[in-house]
Amino acid sequence: MAGVRRARQETLRKARQETRREIDDFLRIGAVQVAELDLGDGTAAEEEGEAEDAVLRPGPGSPPVTSGAVFVLVRRAGLPVGTLLGQVPEGADPTRVLAGLARELPPGAPPEPLPAPPAASVVVATRERADQLARALDSLLAQDHPDFEIVVVDNAPVTGETRELVERKYGERVRYVCEPAPGLAVAHNRGLAVVRGEVVAFTDDDVVADRRWLTELTAPFAADPRLGCATGLILPARLRTPAQVLLESHGGFAKGFVPRTYDPEHPPADEPLFPFTAGRFGSGASMAFRTAVLRTVGGFDPATGAGTRARGGDDLYGFVRVLAHGQRLRYTPRALVWHHHRETWRDLETQAYGYGAGLTAYLTAILVNRPALLPALLARVPGGLAHARGLTAVRATGEGEGEGEGAGAVGAPGGHDSRTHPWPRRLARLQRRGMLYGPVGYLRARRALRAAGVEAR
Image (cartoon, rainbow, N blue to C red; front, side, top):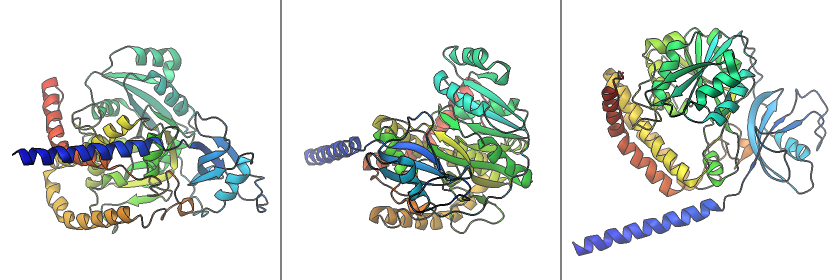
């Protein structure tokens, strides 16, 4: 027994040393500026090194661009087409340097014209973050959508700050709703119950929405009567801390710049676990549903999401329920929000564990609420494991980095699987622990809901 204890202590000692090294490496990650560069419509002369028609702007809340590393969203005629990581030399013109790099990106397919978007509602769930909420609401009120409303759901408030902010600053332009039961899915269901729009969009209180976000996110519903859900592009608003840079260098929340439609009648060949790989479809900070469809499938499972013991998975649950209902899902990168990533190592630890827990919690929720889907999930497991082994091999060797959409931006934070910085093993272990906990957390969350008198799905 003494030998076993010594071996265990030695293992723990080595793990602590490894984590310490990883944190030291993490703290050496430097800040990156965030900006957006519009190349215009391409009609002006583009001599080598010239940038007559390019317009460079700092990212939301960022100072003007100077020398150093810059993460750039590249637009053409106002539409997002890719990202790159540029290095501006001391004394150089940032616009000229970055425009030269941006013109090496693939031009992308010509944008398809959009139909008139349907009437929409935007739901923002929040809890005790009035300053961030105000920034998000300012961007939402500036949307160019012709017919929309905004509903703020104050989730389990401790103070009256959110209500006071909405009533004082936004008056009748924003509706305030209070949901006393904690949990993001509970708050989203509360919003779903009161909205009036044909399409309901959800975003977070820590985003800044691009002016065309709501139009681009909701217009596809007018073109496709079988569209049940749409998701959009999420980019970092700031890359000031090592945590923000590390997260974004591993893809962040971005899903690339190629639009894609997922159809349950024609499962994608490159998604062997479809539709259970819901994290590939988008994220809760930029998602919209046909209101009638989301109500028909019962909304979100209230035992999932931040603020519950399940820790997450509410958005993934919504995606799969809509696809299982026979509806299509559309990813549209022209619908852009800027997200304020978490800022510290401790935040990343919490986030990694929560992602793992949310993943298995939502799968548990799907099987609890739709047990008929179990055979489909089991049938997809062998192919999914083979696919996962392939991805693990690529990550271990570093092959394929920078490939796919935006390949001209090799090594760029936000580039497709660029992995500029190694992902700490400590965070990977926490995510695996979260995956083991997820089903337990979900069942505990259901019990807590019943005790609180909230109906579980």
